[in-house]
Length: 271
Image 1 (spheres, rainbow, N blue to C red):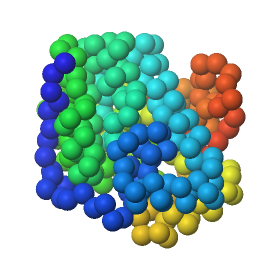
Image 2: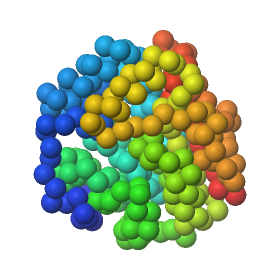
Image 3: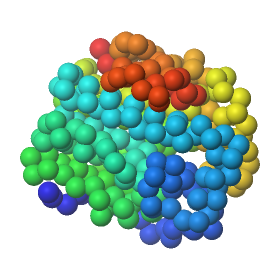
Image 4: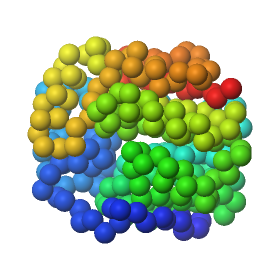
């Protein structure tokens, strides 16, 4: 395995703030990871006290991403991935899933949290045949993301853009759509867009817990309606079954976790 390339950015020298809960670390806690602090565990426990189903949502989201990547590599022949809003490394990261099937796959991760950066350097390794790189940047700066990613990815070849639970951090829906459009405009025909985010109008308990979290001082995450999530795929060819609750997107088998949750996503091809 070879070391990943890392492109430093504005957050490279920021200190990790352990006094305020952070969504990436809380998500890691819900997924059973160890890369979090007491403040994150407290926030995570307070959230689950209001809405225990968040743990199922977190794990269903991860499983959805794994199934997306498996399809993209095995059936669509994709060998390049741009994963923005990486979060803390856990099991079945994008490069692990892709390179298990096609070792020559190339993956660029993007995040701007100093703790994620530290763990990306330590944990995100590539097969010798492929490549894995990390860009220290934000989805809010698509031009920088694309310029840095182009050092590893060939944007003349089909590429999968992965936006998993990141667009909710952009409060303005029109701005979020504009960023998705800009990123997809840079990718050629035959590329894919994978999006999943928490959904509003499905589970009042989830909405209550999320609204409370957003008032806690942590970085807010905005739930969107299913129609709003679907609009990110405008102009693209949505694969069946379309935008659905994530456990219902091409489930591998009927399991206790197959029931719908307030997290919707889909996968679409650029014509």
